[in-house]
Image 1 (cartoon, rainbow, N blue to C red):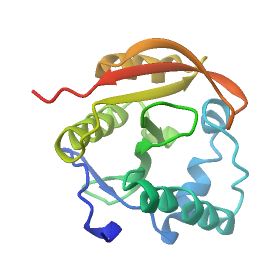
Image 2: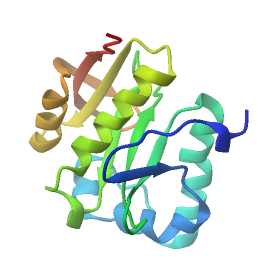
Image 3: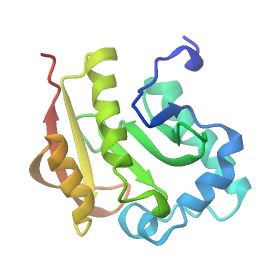
Image 4: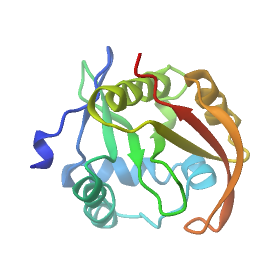
Length: 177
C-alpha cells in the first residue's frame, strides 16, 4: 500500500497530511521552541537540512513501517502548518502512543484537543487497536490535563530509555460503540 493511499484523520478546523521535505522550515521552528526542548526533546534540528533528514528518517520512516505516525496538522482556511499529531510506536511502550506538538503561537485555541479527538476517531474507524497510551513530561501539566479531558486515565510513570527519563503514563481503551 502506498502511504498516500492511507486514510487521514479529519476535523472541523484542521487538516492532516503526511510530512514532506517542504515542511523542513516548519519542523525546524517547532522543534526549537523552548517548550519542545523542555517537554519533548532537543533533537538537534538546527537547519532545514537537519529537518529534512529528520522528516525522512523519523516520521516518514515510521509511517512506512507502521502505517501510522505523526501527521502534519494544518489550519483548513490557510493550509498553514501549526503542529503535528498522531500515533507513535515505541519500543518501551506496550501500546501506540498518542503524540502531539503545536507551535506556541497556536496553543490555547483548542487545536491540540481537536487534533487528538480526530486521531482517536481515526483509530476507532480505521484500525483494530483497542488500547492507546500517552506519555508526558512529569512537569507538563497542560498536556496531562488535555489527556484526562480526552478520557485517558493516569497510569503511573514509565522510564523511557530513548529519553533517559521518566514520563507520566496514560492509557485509554478505544470506544467502539
